[in-house]
Length: 136
Ligand SMILES: [Cu+2]
Image 1 (cartoon, rainbow, N blue to C red):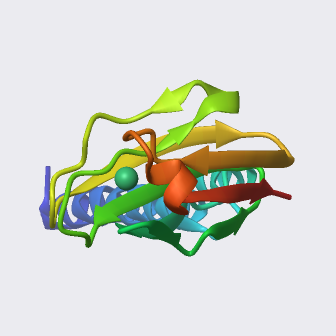
Image 2 (image 1 turned 180 degrees about the vertical axis):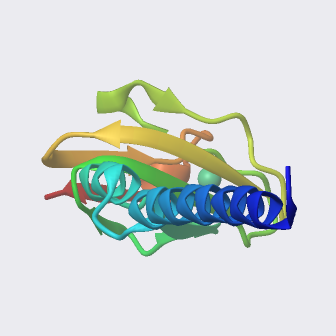
């Protein structure tokens, strides 16, 4: 093997390496391209709706909560001076007592409709602790 042969072999090796890197680079670009599989899956599953509801004596703020159908996270925060809870009877939802200055997150899958909610602690609903979840 003389010097020319060795040079040719080395060039061939560099050419195949360059070809391989070119193919690999293209594959990576295709995988990361917007509109690829990942982006499509994201479009089908919209972002989770997160709604904060504050509780105090004796009301919920806001008392009317409007969301789109699908997955909803209700962040229930007790800004009052005694424990409260949160229930949506039509959906079979009821939290434990939520202590003063604490919060609880309730995750729901909701269909369009109107769902009354309330605090089930004795007398609280009658005193004004109730509201409506409206799902569009
Ligand atoms: Cu209450």
